[in-house]
Length: 412
Image (tube, rainbow, N blue to C red):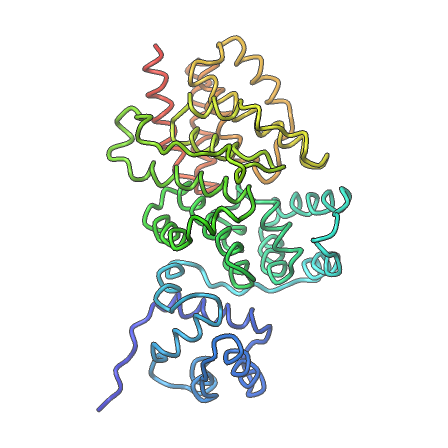
């Protein structure tokens, strides 16, 4: 009887091949490559796949059949997933383009190759990383190469992914780079970080089905395990819980937000304090949800202080926090129109963090439209907002705009 063809998503299958090649650091085109892959798969998964099976998978031996589900599950486990069905669910729609390194990206990676991230990192090193991040913001090809190439190194994961989170490129090169970060994640905490950033991505791009897929992976973690993670990661997790509640509210675009619908997070517990100013991400999530008064309360807590950040990041964080405070304070009527105008003019003159430039510009545009309500300004601002939505993919800001309109109508 003829063998039944395994039904698989071709995008997911192509991406799986790509990630295997990246993990092995070989293109899997010769018998010696296949032997190395065979050995690595057995080391990682304790499963044996024959060389003939792997040759068929990579097209060295042509066949009219897709691999069996056992083969696909084993290969998915090799690149860090529980099964091929999980891999397919998460990656069916993703682009599997080849990332080819250039001399520039290889040089950047080599600069940091011998730096131990566990040792004290001099401010000069952070400034170099920041400068490279600035270059990548203007060069998507370079950014794609760097994120792919940095993911295998401990330094790369810590600084190019975890510390310098590229919010503006969540729906672009940074978000795509997370698949390489996951491929090289050494522990469950790193995987947790990637799942959280995927949740951020799909919340801001208003893709609730994809959000729920990654949110379900977060739910597989025990609370006691989560509480042992880095405090900033716990803060991001609380923010994702708020995002999930926003997505779960029925008809939330047309009803005033009910404070009782939101969980009261114990963000000031001993687990949620850190030198990263734990709590501001929860305040930011509440701001995005339309809970302006509660956001204002949290963002102005004495617990949130930028003083412990390094000089490289401190000024940027002050600007970041200032914009969040102004937006929450103004739209909750905790800041007068006159004071808001003064703060807006001050903040509008400051350079925005390079990896948050577009994201924070959304808030400044919403403030500008309210503080300068002339029709010509309103038209200009709306065009800029629409441009930024197309550029970043952050469709959620259209829904946020509705929340602002509702808030303004209530205050009149």
